[in-house]
Image (cartoon, rainbow, N blue to C red; front, side, top):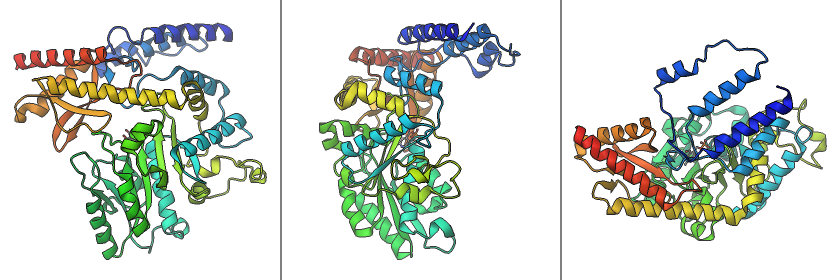
Length: 469
Ligand SMILES: Cc1ncc(COP(=O)(O)O)c(C=O)c1O
């Protein structure tokens, strides 16, 4: 095959795969050992043989999870948007690193354009942005900027001999906060997990108590992260209730909107879930989750500071790479980044933004919430299912009702059976020791009928397992 034939064949394969995404089962399941046998990864390569390459591609597709299938309701992402897929392909073809304008001129301008669009949308004034490799890293970078801002000599001296730093998050915050505290030298003991209320929101009275304890012990409370849409329950910390504390104690208030930050697109949902966001110090938000850009597509926004990221991050001699002589005209993105090579994530994001617009994406978020409410109604009506915690936003945490002592094992077995039979893949998590199924409905093509089918299958399999027991 010559290059043109390769491209033509590739497009045919892509087209066939995408057309069949909603059909059949979401997965042709095989155990790891079984799949290893089918794939035959040890087969020697045939250098230069395109038939062989496409045979691998076919195998990859045949046994992959169809993330666009309506019964894939497991994760915070699903099959990607077509404009983003176009962007991915072009990104691969051009294969540039978005660290400097000279090597990635268009993507640098697109990324900066998108920062401004997002800063305006969120309401951050005189701020800056950075695309990162996901919210885990964005959370860490925000914590790092806050750390260096709270105690500037740390950048040179390290934490040696400095005041002990304390960070605070809600008890349901994402594990990336723990990792950030570990990586940044804060230490897990200084990452204080504040208890949450019935809705999963951080109790501000508890937070204030914890801050005071840290101060009385000689510590410096430097960082509080509010979560906008917690991973398991979908709880929202009340940003507006945290702002007065920030003003009193002077910490950096970060908002982790990896999952639920997308509510910012919708006027009504922003009002409901994100009051006060425009006054936070930083905000991270994933376009690859609820909004369907391809993985990874994240932004970290900083409020009212223009050089916080470069100040916190830049170190060492990058003069072989960054053209600081040009800064009057355009600043490279690399110096404000954790990485050296930077994948171009801006193109797919830009294309999605132009294709759907704010209104289109807001409608998608609102639909996701409506479907979650519909699913909640189904669970409430069913005698066989129960909610484990009240729904607050986009996540529904429920389980099949069986005696409490059997519940975790039974629900895990039910979920596993549904997965292995290729029927559906729904998330599981634990809330106070209780195993829950976490349903997230973010497929833009999903309809009520898909949810009817999801619950019909789940209840039928649950009954079958009860009979087997
Ligand atoms: C609330 C929250 N924050 C951060 C993350 C991490 O995001 P990423 O996968 O982009 O690193 C997640 C992922 O599920 C999340 O739910």
